[in-house]
Length: 400
Image (cartoon, rainbow, N blue to C red):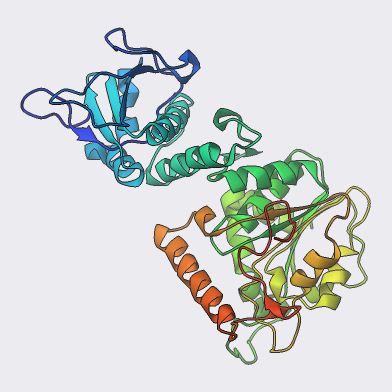
């Protein structure tokens, strides 16, 4: 249960959007919010003084006290995280929770808390990562006016459980993976491009909708020469493909993965081995595609056979090709723009779901690149005389 003050009043915290399965509080005063949200708006002044101008208080009442400690987190940690992120106050008392703050921020907090409450009702875990994801989703829903309501966001279902989007961009990406035969996922590191693509492939394989998965990467060293690696061919290329193996291990039990790889149902191979093949009834993923040449990219895309799907992921700002070599990914985005059947999902630094510091690092590098371009000293590779930054494409793949 949340910590209590000696006077009996609940501590006040900044909070995020609140659960949908909540019951309106009979004691709430003021106008009621939509019942589907499960909350009642209390526009009266909070205890202890009048509310500042342009502020609003919403009181929510939960109908399952056993889930409240899981929602609040140990020592109210989840609520404190919401408080800091959204700049609202939260007051808890019994099974009631009051959010006070600017109207738009209380809406975000209510939506986020609603998403977390629904997770708990389904028996799913709620931790710091889930709290951050709920806030990102709620903020995206408010800012972007997306096609899908927060409670209807798509998920990828594997036998190890459902993998839900953590940002609106991920929700759009998952929707594209389900609807299109070829999808490009473009954006900075840590946005889930490859992880979600692998998850979709595993889901289709386990459902019998494809016969196999082929995962590929160009074997390009990231800015340093590794020399001649020891071992047979598999041992030489495995270090380049390790991120794909890591994603697979997250999606299915180890023994099932070993069995499927031995049977050829899952293949992880360097891009050089794709030439001359036809990938029929297959789910193919090309990762780190920014490190392909134009010829390699064309070669991979034309391997597509009957009943196949392809996903290409990469970050045009992290090209490790020799100086003067044009990235095949950048060229493909230009050449294939507007081609029917191809979708492009664009991620930005606010979609990074790794450690929060990663998003700030990506943003700092983006600002440095922008300053360098304006000064005529662009970092990285240029496209038609202008460097392609992380914001170079819209989420639908059109150039700004």
